[in-house]
Length: 424
Image (cartoon, rainbow, N blue to C red; front, top):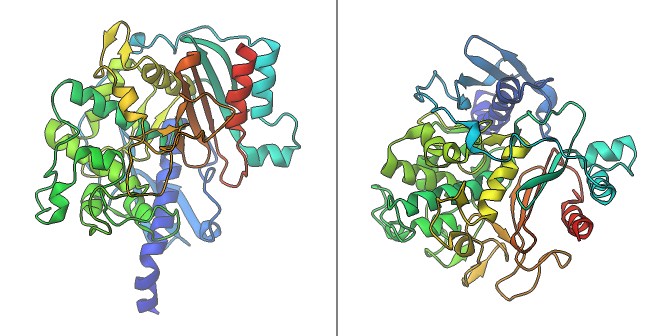
């Protein structure tokens, strides 16, 4: 039976790691209860036990097996580790730099209010609304908040987890470091241990998810993505250790591993640890609610772990819409957004419209992914129903946050189309 336990232990640890981290983050970042909220449907859930302790939150199976500790890290959310890591100090962010967060609450005209009502499922019964799971919508038009709405139990000030929308923010952060001359898209020889064909992997390969490193993004117990997030002290080293499954640059395959590894590469240049996103980008934008969590060696979890209020997410979208100009100052290379929202030809492609950290409405063949939206629309997309749409031609940003693990349609494409119609 002990052999069986050691065989299933990695599976159990991804479950307890998820539960400990989730409870810790809900308590310390979002200030929400119950701490078992936001656990995805999973056969382990009834057997998980989660409790606060001196350092943060502890989770196990039935109180004894596969225990994992999530530590509360001041300014950096929560980190899974056997013993308390030292992530240094989180640099202060001045919210006065953010022209979005302090705007008065908008009272939306009827057509806009109706668009939001549909996005929140006002037409559905309680159970269907719960499955739809919308928690916040913010609409920015020409830089102004023209509509916003929040679900019961969620305030405008409640930070929400963006999951893979974090990858799009990583693309912006990379642009900032490129503008400063710290790194270049063409940089290769990114890891000392890559003495084989992996040495040719570039920063752009990681950004566009065409590194060729073996990966499985399925959120199941014991897959590479859940192993990385919930059972690795050094997430980037785990990703870098994967063998090549394809020749570098020939296959686009979605990989959270690529993006977190990218941030370890950026930190090799910057030496700023968990504070890298705050210094390189978040502080410049004044998104003061932002909490970007890190692993136990201080690599920001750039695939998944940025929390921010819906308005701060919208501010990040506005920064992208304005091609990296903020408060009159250019922070990204001119044309960076055009580059990173354009798909490039590649032999094999898992995602027809994944560009460089962003999803685009235009496939490489020139067809529209969402015919109801303009050609130039692009978006950030995250697990369980997180979306941030940017439509440059309409000067529009729409953010939708929620918890929708079992919703068939989170109604966000329709939301953006309805908002465009309402704004005329």
